[in-house]
Length: 207
Ligand SMILES: [Zn+2]
Image 1 (cartoon, rainbow, N blue to C red):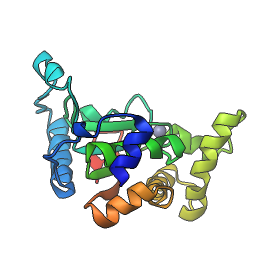
Image 2 (image 1 turned 135 degrees about the horizontal axis):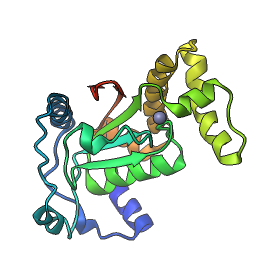
Image 3 (image 1 turned 90 degrees about the vertical axis):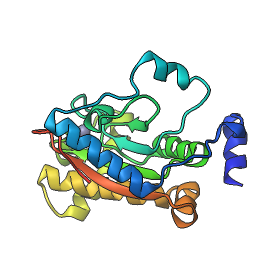
């Protein structure tokens, strides 16, 4: 029912759904292994050549969804040594779970069959810093910062990295609270949602 619903919504053929799907626990191990290669300077850069480009023309089956900040220093495909068609990455300042990011994740869950969602905050996030400083000033920026402020209250801290970690956890919880497709997939389809922290100083991801 979810597939049909989303198929109607997006007007994309259901036949594109891949049958071979990586389970969440294997996807987490893949991310850890890729990040270890990144840290050790031993990246493989698989699936990044023209052959891979052509092989993906007919569809995609990414094995992990990453909701990450837009910060230029935090690049999931590099941090996890992943190639084309492997990660379904949504980047927005503060890695918040708003309607657009939720909808993007719903698409990957329901239509591409992806089983793992990682919400990745990062050290010294500027969006979290702006929320701590009561920044804002435009309708859009105020919307963004309003999504982050609950993490300040819940963390009970003014330490930016403590708030970043709580913000990633709250975003992960909000994905479930704000989407029946995601919460149903977690209950019944083996989908897992985890939060993570990217260390700017060395590129290590704490999963
Ligand atoms: Zn950030």
